[in-house]
Length: 368
View 1 (cartoon, helix red, strand yellow):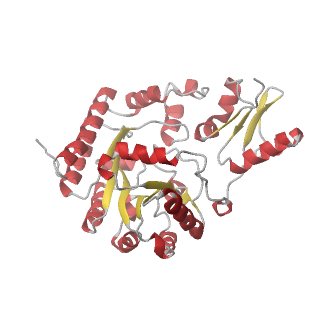
View 2 (spheres, one colour):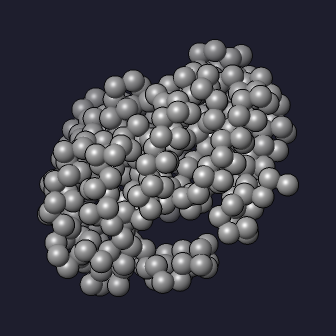
View 3 (cartoon, helix red, strand yellow):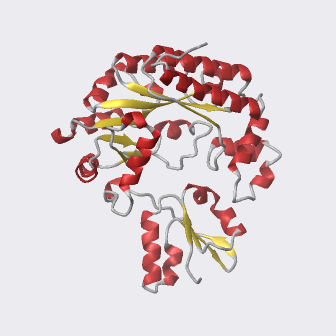
């Protein structure tokens, strides 16, 4: 129809060259953070400065049939970005969907924000084997601006619970303390749901979680097997996991453990260890919900790199742009674990059933 087509997001950020080589339907790809590059591209096009398009950062395009870019990457300073507007979305539909998923929480009116981007653990170590986050470094928004956004959510959309979707809200302890200390008086009734590595849940941080009115903490537990945790670069053990959940339970803060099956070297024995840990957490109490998924080697993750470098499929995969992740998930299990896919699915379902039993029997797992 003569339109200019632009593609962006995590997948093209990693697969830009392959997409431009294999597909003819995209004029431009924008990699990584796109707010400023897209505005500059639009300015060039709307003002007839097409010769300047080559200078737009983060942009990938074809020039005389060859994939090209100027090589310059633009990174946002989060403090320069405005508060995101919700005026162009049906906010009420998100609330309705939440109530369908959690019919026992009809009094909660949730709103989501992000206070930071990036993961300090990924910066130090390269990150967990399944992590496909693209940011380098940890960047924080302006604290006063975040609270202003929260006040807008409360006043305009009647939100009473804030879900901060940052990778790890305790990336920087001093920043978090300042954030809590700057909380306006009229926001003290709002509750929070945050993310944290288990290593950062310590007694000296509890007072700040309580001051913020944190009701629940999402914990990336991943496995109940120490060998698998070490091999997936998780940087934690079953002991540190248990220590964290006990501290939260002691102070009446709910926790939401997440598990990933199919870590490198996974076996039926290691999955039994994970299932046992899930049941221990259910019996311990304090767990609000849990989730278990199967590792997907998403482009940009260490797992995806392992397939490229250490498997017979790697050479073919290196040329692809349209990736069948469900196939790749099965291929990963067949190649990098010691168990078959059907058995992994069985244990995933067992673990998720643990949560249903936990809910049905009033917070105690029925081991029968």
